[in-house]
Length: 306
Ligand SMILES: C[S@@+](CC[C@H](N)C(=O)[O-])C[C@H]1O[C@@H](n2cnc3c(N)ncnc32)[C@H](O)[C@@H]1O
Image (cartoon, rainbow, N blue to C red; front, side, top):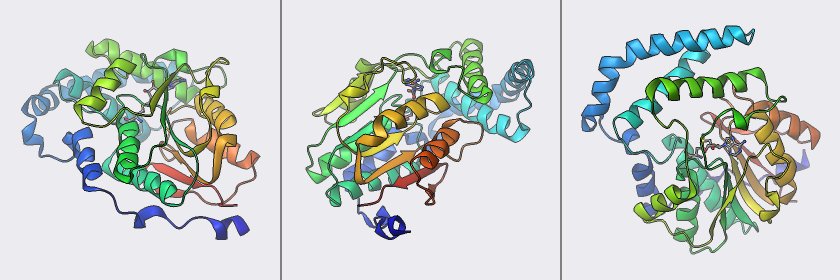
């Protein structure tokens, strides 16, 4: 109860610099413009979506049946929609630097500004980076506030395939990754893939500084992930989707999050992903039963000020 009282006020009061808001539009222009600006993409969707949806859905259903599972049709449909969109963007050469919806970009920026404004010590840690979108938002906020703390970007920096799953992951996590493999093969596209040089280029292309931005590479489920490269943390954003990766991250990095700091679970409310189970188990283990704040599909965990 005390913890509840000492929870920092919601960060929505933070004002964002115009440059940060402008960055949101550049990270994911497709979400801010009329679809008519993307005729190749619209053509892909109109001409192939029905066929692709049916073909992939059939393959994924077979995969699910082979795992002895029955995923709710609406869960499968939501997931398929995002997989199809990812591949249509890639097929039509539309550059997107972040998977975050506008409300999540906004929330991340405000949470970063809030920990800086509250004087919470430590770096910003972005776990699950893809093309660097969320990391760029964090860095742009720090730049706008003239704050020199580091942004640490943790990722595999490779193709997200079955290597990111282990026996502890729920079967649904394995199905999601296998379905991504299927889609990559079906479309002949890169799927969810990234590399450090590509992300550096993305920062440069969007005019976000790389000073103090550090890339920590490894598989979060492996015993040798270099968690030691991370020092004290003011804010950590967890967007590595799956159970074991989230669990390992929390076990190694939660003790480094400072009082008054913040942890964001990107996919907490997304059905089928193991992130939520890992978050719930961990929060129960550390005895924090306070409600999380919901922002779209994500959840914000504000640690007590102390
Ligand atoms: C949903 S994307 C991150 C999206 C990003 N935050 C953005 O702004 O668009 C998930 C990322 O998590 C990474 N990831 C997933 N499992 C991982 C693991 N076990 N180890 C390291 N990285 C992992 C993937 O490589 C991928 O880049």
